[in-house]
Length: 159
Image 1 (cartoon, rainbow, N blue to C red):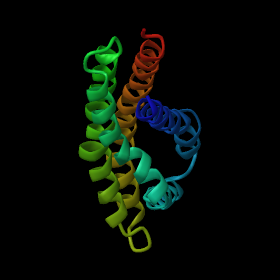
Image 2 (cartoon, rainbow, N blue to C red):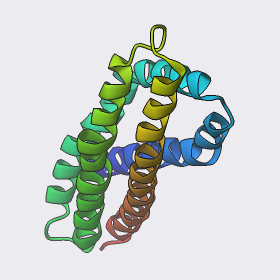
Image 3 (cartoon, rainbow, N blue to C red):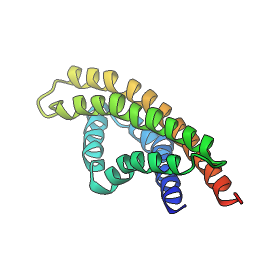
Image 4 (spheres, helix red, strand yellow):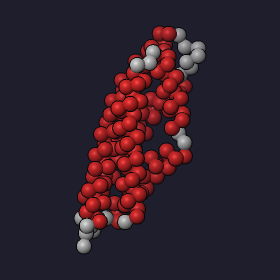
């Protein structure tokens, strides 16, 4: 039960992180000019790659596998399967194969030596797709958290 609780908490932490970005960080960044936007995004992308974030973001994959396996013959299994699928595909997969490659491209972009047109083009190429992918992973994370809560509730009330 402890692994299940930690797993649901980690899923909730990721859902909260993505939600908070959606409702505050992204709208705030949208108000910046192109150079400020790219500089701020580069700084935040670098800052988020820290042990605390990575422990929760990647560690949750292992925890989800264990928690789901532990629920195999129990009521919460279906919901933990949904939690795992939503997180692994919709959160981790979208991030790893969508947002991270965009972040890597942005990280390599030389803001100091780029022309105004190059800066404008980089923002246009980056922002729209990144936000769409972020919206998908945010929805997936919130749904995964809800499913995890239901699975946890069923596990706690099973006799």
